[in-house]
Length: 339
Image (cartoon, rainbow, N blue to C red):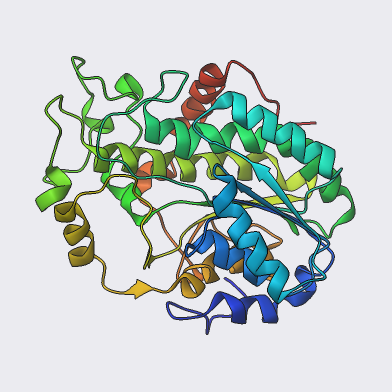
């Protein structure tokens, strides 16, 4: 249970930051996916409001992250701020970004894996991985593991569990488990029933391209991966002073898609009961990252600032282990979580 059961769907991230100001002050915080008008920028502004020691903003587009940095500097001129270019679809970019972060700081108190995409046409990363699985899961998997030495150092001096890894997911994870038999969704392979997506899909969510690609199903797979990744981290990192949580921020009045069509956008508006402002959308991230009541692992997945249960396929320990091994294979490197 969180310490503030009164927080909920319409709680503002700015309010959460004020309540947990002591957990921000002097800390080194890194946020990915920071761009104007989104929850990444709102999350960054709310952290900046409470005097962090160092705020690192990561984004794939310099102009967009610089716009947010300018807003922060105007509002909070004393905040120490750094920008890192990070394209989570490119493993080369991820390794360069992690090296740059290590040059900027020798410890990292809070990592917010905020970045994410939703595409409806078949695309691949430079490594040949389906774009959403590659960007939404493999990218944060590699980036987080490369930054673990910095997190471990913070974990030695912070109160146990105050060092946090926070990964944003989506309620859409319920639509699909991990398709280990065909994670690239190339087709032509028999998919075991336990790996198949939820059926029937509603309206535009069922729409496929001519080559059979369904962007909603592949997005859902990547969001299940975010939860399984966090589930696996929770198994090993608490003994090192680090806790990990994942969350659904809600439906936000901003667009995370590069190429959603009007029909799909309309379908999203039909299924979302409430659309949050970016400030409201950042609140659950801030609770997960800051609430001292969560120093001891209390749950896995938060919605509207409180814990709830993800779909059972996102808490399967066998799937979590398989996903970790597959992810290591796809980045060409093994990572030891025990020290």
